[in-house]
Length: 559
Ligand code: GLC
Image (cartoon, rainbow, N blue to C red; front, side, top):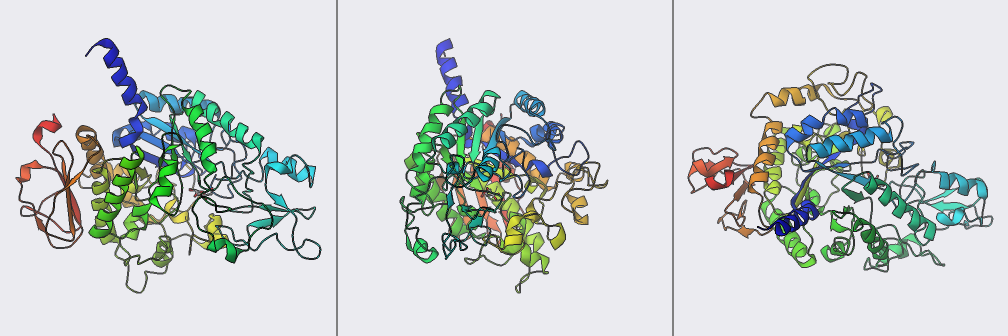
């Protein structure tokens, strides 16, 4: 290769690192607490960079660490270009990025553009400036209905439950998709658009490699009068012209963002959190002229079922090919019941994913909860998705095989979804946000010197990093080995199915001969291949045991 060709190849690789990356999501307040106040922080993450490097991930995604009143776990941002003083300083952020980059780990940060916190300077200004002011025009203020405007403008419900309108002292109402402390911005306002470009440059200049865009499908709205009622709203198709969701005009925003991303070398990447109605609509967010990639949440909503998995995998690979993006795989994040617990519950059969916590807390649903089965299936599903083309997003604690924590009293809960009783049914999302156990004992299992901000159950001791790191059969050891092998085996973005003659067994091969065999059933699946070719997972009498996955690879791929 000539020098120029080598440089070109290196540049191309740097620009496409995200296509098949393993990205580890950190929920900063619950990862590691360096200053002993019970809340995780940036220096805490910095102190665990070796752990992240050893885990073998390609990038981390940091959930919000910005100044916040924590009305929604940090997704209520009071200042987009600073660090919450309880979590550190901008200097701590710079040090963290430098330490991660030194280890070859890239950094994605969360951008929350749909709404600010009610503590944001703009919203405070809007409250003070009064109706009709320029400051109110950055948000969605409207007059109420009823004789003296005492009723909200519409009967719409917010995602977390209750009205999506809140009244302010002078009688006007403002719109909020989520908690009352999260007023929605008006994305028709040029200052709003300008300010986010500034934020994207601010973090890109500090060396951030990419962005995760919170509720990317909600930003633009059509609030022209008359506003429809809730019943009318529900009948409007989500095909690009819905007043509130997944509007076509949101892509003008992302086209502008793309121009900013492309000012950098390598271009900054982005992944959309877009809960939209069809794979085709999702592809718009993933387009190269827009954010470039979009989360695929289909597996979050699927049961541990070979047929469902196969359909989801095939559909998403086809869609990724059509859009030119690469797909993403997600089994857990900070918004849903951990997959080790989900897979121990009876089939979802259409019920919301979140009901898991409530059932576990109640000692199980009528059909029972089997946590060991859940853990087994979670390992099998994770090994399956790590073998797929595309990028994988892992959520902190899943590498320890953590279950959802149900032992949180009402008084200890923090999630607004629990208090308002909206879309996240039951107990809300705190159960997957409990601070990680690093050691088997100590005030907070090594999370920090103080008691953690959400209670850690006693069983966390068994899952502590120091315990699992010593045990070659632990979930942590499995994740480390899988991520190490994945780096060696990762290849082109194709997949060919191998028919197994079994409805409950999926088997596929990647172009270089790396095979993944996932047995979703309980009957062993005879492999019909030399067992020394199995590089990950264990056989029993030359068969893949029930509820497990193995990887097969030609020796030369392992160097
Ligand atoms: C996203 C986040 C969730 C948050 C919501 C509002 O769905 O993942 O945690 O509550 O947006 O910002």
